[in-house]
Image (cartoon, rainbow, N blue to C red):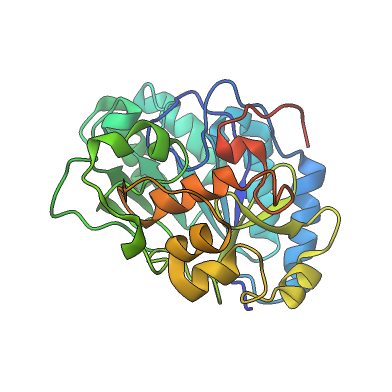
Length: 303
């Protein structure tokens, strides 16, 4: 298992509460990485020897601006390529946008701005344009991420990391609860594979403020603050894992079937069935289907 990208969920907190959010980001969430924890993660990245990219995401990482800037500086100083995903709420005027981005100039190789109806903005909206212009002026590579509505047709869902441009909504996290009813349904038995994540050799994982190592949002391989990443990845057996094993054998349908989870007749997509099944199984696999923040429970504290 060779990991080239670590995506740090700097916080679950966000100024928005978007209906499509994989991680249930919102104002009620409060988990946040400290600088010490970021340093510990970077130390473990050094130990791995295969990591090329460090991303800072959320939630909204700019809510904890000091930790974001220092974290970016530390990662860049160690030779990592750095990315940030943000909704650009901070780009209220051209000079404000530039002031926020100036400390990041020369350190960030990918700034992704989320701009769509879920964020109350559009690609040509003022905050988005302020952020794009400021980044361009400072030489920071920048792109837009836009998620289409659940009724949209002809828009492909992204596999793995969400690319620049428009992608279809994927029904995991809050999207499974808030948007799935607006999409068409398919028989649950047809979802016989995971179409979006490489569960055998993922290439990247998400790390949250509590230490959970997510192979997919809400599926934890372990806690990096208890067991080093190097050991977690070395010990990972995808076929024997209680969640990824069934998913690899027969997708979300097999995960539900082998655990005796009663399914509805139809689901919006494979992620919708997978999320609903995992939520039903949290009591059976509490350490793996964690934390509660990924399933709609409010997080708390600084971890």
